[in-house]
Image 1 (cartoon, rainbow, N blue to C red):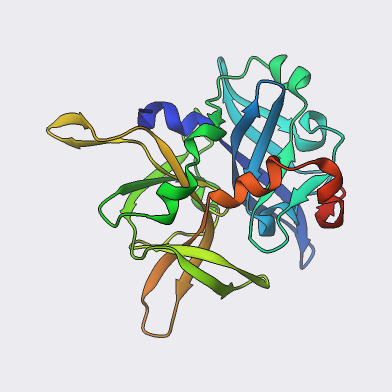
Image 2 (cartoon, helix red, strand yellow):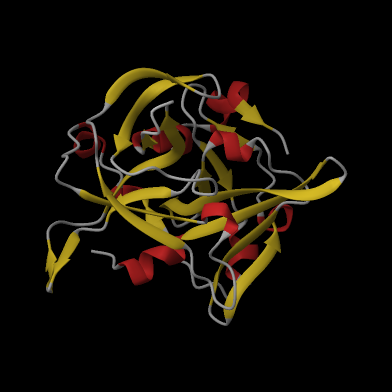
Length: 248
């Protein structure tokens, strides 16, 4: 079980400067740390976030003495970003030696908490928590990304066409996301608080925030990419991925 006060330390804020009508604006996204082995460390995010990263992208994450701010290129491994060929999921390998030198205070999810059968049998009674940086908020005097809790509005829906040209499995949340949450983890922390804290299960990662579905009626729901796609891109060999890589 991971408490919310620990889980928020798993995420990073991506901030990429762009020029719009002669003014500097920022593309904002969220990522989170996942490690399949002690020798490998990745930042997981949405592919539509990863494709906008540049040499000027800054990464903010939790440090023992406050927020750490680094250029992504300075902490990234030389290996290219890996993009899933069908789903809105990307993996950025991090240079472990550089990361370990930064006095970070991050929570790193092991891949063991990505349970494909559990995700495939998603319960609408599971309370899910999303952690990210809506509209860039969450970095001020302290490192404080925002969390929101919701319930699944659907089970896994197969082969859905979503913006960005992806055709993948998705599920929906009852509440909408907003800009900046893209790429954030959607997790079952494994407890509920009804006056007392009650552990209900272990912690599991269920998905990666894609975005929001809306229509002319004003109805909105968050769209989530199932977390089992993460295993596709960090558990196969480098040579099998070359056709789907993006060099940065």
